[in-house]
Length: 346
Image 1 (cartoon, rainbow, N blue to C red):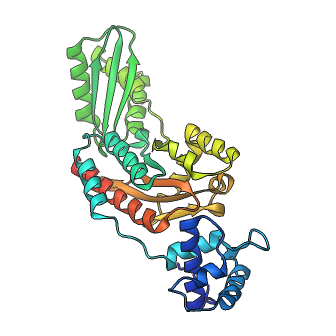
Image 2 (cartoon, helix red, strand yellow):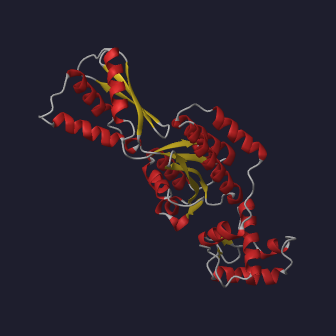
Image 3 (spheres, rainbow, N blue to C red):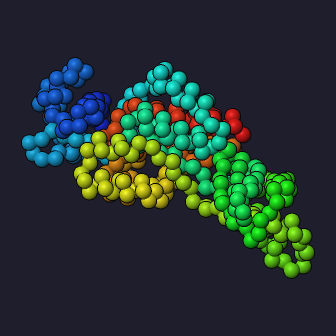
């Protein structure tokens, strides 16, 4: 739904667009005199000043203090992003870079999402974030148990989405390599196409059913699956470019809060998870969420697919004063290309 207020005239929208574009490029409050100097706005400074005052009354602009120019509010930003800005086109050079890097990235979902987060950060000059699916609820494609030293076994779970989870399991006694191969084949042949949670629960029920007599190999298979498939059900984050926070210029308290957010990750993952159902690119800032309001940052995010459904999201995290005309198409393009890259590997 459009955020444009019915009260806004074409002149109002033209001046609001110019104020926000000027603010995005300068980072400073914008005066009516500065807008009047722009060749696109053929109005006197006095007329522009009156319109800016009206826009302030409607909640789209604010004035830090009486003698200052004006800044966009969150409502002003959203109106600009949704209806007023002219989104840039991702350059041919950036498209080639993205396409080449995702084509030559490794074959797993993790390698693709890591490359995507690096590209997001490199091309935006902000923090690149990718939300990856929770493997515990993923559908299993294959499982393999790899013997290490002594009683240590590496459990490698491959999901149908292309993501891979490795987990170290310590067994009660050493298991021969040929038995591990037979166990891997048995679990893959009989349980692929189901979620890890469903597989683990069924095997545990089978193990606890006193009416079922288990041979030694099946008992070992169940015990290995019990430990190897005990994988978390929370999505995880791939983050790149947190060094860019030092260039964003927030106050020290907020800078510390941002680093804490990326260290703990759960709150940011929760915010991104809530954006999965949004169509296209979504911009979150200010009072859109408790996290963006508390720390004063902006988020440009869209979902990506793996297989038949939404797998996660790609995002740029930066100051609320971001180059949205450039960030929105960049995030959109990377989300589309990540979806295509994952589809090629299924």
